[in-house]
Amino acid sequence: MRLLTTDGLEFVEISEEYMERYAILSHTWGKEEVTFQDIESLSRRHWSRAVSKSVSAIQAKKGFVKIQKAADLAAEHGYGFIWVDTCCIDKTSSAELSEAINSMFQWYKNASICYAYMEDVKHGYHDRIGGLFHLLCQHSRWFTRGWTLQELIAPDDVMFYGEDWGYLGSKAHDEDVRLSLADITGIDVRVLEGIIQPSEISIASRMKWASQRKTTRLEDVAYCLMGLFDVNMPLLYGEGTKAFIRLQEEILKSSDDHSIFIWRAPENASTGALSGLLAESPRYFADVENYRPMPPSVSRGSSAWSMTNQGLRLSLFLLPSRGPSGDGDGRDTQDEYDAILECTIRHGDQAYQSPALKMRQLYGDQFARVDSRTIERVATPSFDPVHDIGSYEIVFVKQNPVYAIPDFEVSYYNILSSSGSPRPPFCYITGVWPEKYWDEDAAILRVARPHSNQITGLFRFFAPSISATVDFAVGLSRDRGGNWAVWYLERPSMGEPLRLTASSANSYLTATNRDFKFTKQPDWLANPWSTTENNQLIEVRIEDIEVHGRLCYFVRASLAVQELGSNENASGKGESDVNTTDHKSISSSQPSAETDTNILNPPEPADSEIRPASSPELSYLFTLFDD
Image (cartoon, rainbow, N blue to C red; front, top):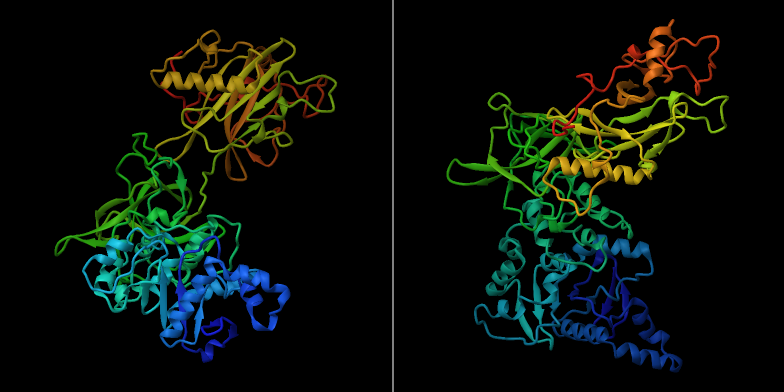
């Protein structure tokens, strides 16, 4: 550990095994702070006339005056050494900086005395008038900074000084100061008195202490809390909010306190957005209630938490949700649960309440939190499956959860060869929206998270033999059991850019779903969208298939008249045009002698070989559409 001598402001390296008594300074940083290099240049072994000008400039800095005053105060109190964070760390060394930040809580704890300098508090006082400390100091910047939280909690005693270094009071010796500190910071006064350790306070409550504090670097929001939670981790400046996620992951390695999950997202967060179980910032704990972790259950074995490549693995007590969906759309759901956490607030002799999070089953054992702005308070259950309809389940929760969404796979019968073909397919695709999700080689439209009242994708098919083009828009919805269902819109193409066609389809959905007034007449009034197969020239069918056990929607377009002819002339069945796929009913007609057997130019299939999207098990059409 590097300390400053109080009589000459020179550095000394002291082994922590044989540590001398030392004072330590707590303060807020300003514009004229003194660095490690500045103090090095002031040492007598580097003194020369050549550097006297720069030395004078260093000594004129406000930061140097602050260090000198603190050193003089420490010497007056009988301490030969002092530690100051601005100059006792060589911040040009990332290794030294990481070691210092990981050790800082312990350094403040081991200090014989901590001086807290509040440069924005104008007056000191030496009497004991009750409440004066609160009146003078409550608006000080010192209470708003992230690093000063551990600097208040870790030392046994903190002596406070104002702008002119007038004495304001002591944490250890003035009850009025302790009560004022507890009121200003929200910290349990027993922690300030040293009666209980911070580790005896719930994780959520400790996070709340930091919820209103700020740091200059975003990552320091997490790094300044490592000591408070007794964890260590490497510094990765540039990782942003991931630092706070990493902090919580480190905390979970040695804690089973469910209160770490009791946070609320900001009011501007999306109601239906999926989220993980870890908060992005201490600010999310600002309104947390004083839940206390429950002791371990005697009748139930231990269940370890762990971070995996499939997310956080843990055991949660799940009750089937009886209320509306977490999307806020008013629908009942069968894929959502109330996860009741093992924390309680006591109300009366036998009345306890626990927090409940709304969780949604995405697929298998993958879950996500929904409506993260809300935490319900419910009567604490027995947590025994014998007495409750709920039960403990092992679940996985990713920090950035996603649905397992079926993709749309277009038939190779509808793909035009880039190298050309003796003759094109009867009907081929000329455009896909959104293009960024279109895998041209695999002929697959990868689906981002769908919206229930917006299209997911758009296909444009062209039949050169009859000069007809159709726009076919598709969408996905989750039913109340959590299963995906496909719906579609179609109309003859007007030839405009696909993005405008997609906008038209979404405009139609918006207008159909609510009383909407347009400033100008929408194009779909003249060229309406339809939810039924009314195109007499090009017929588009959707079939659900399984690719390696994963649901996928198979899209295929054909000439309506050609399908009729194929029914009359079909003479057999051949291989499907999609390999390694478990089709429920798709197969192609056996090629005739006159037909090119290239997969890009096959004959059209018989009408009976494809199940239309109007089949009950394949189609989920909005009843709000009325043609």
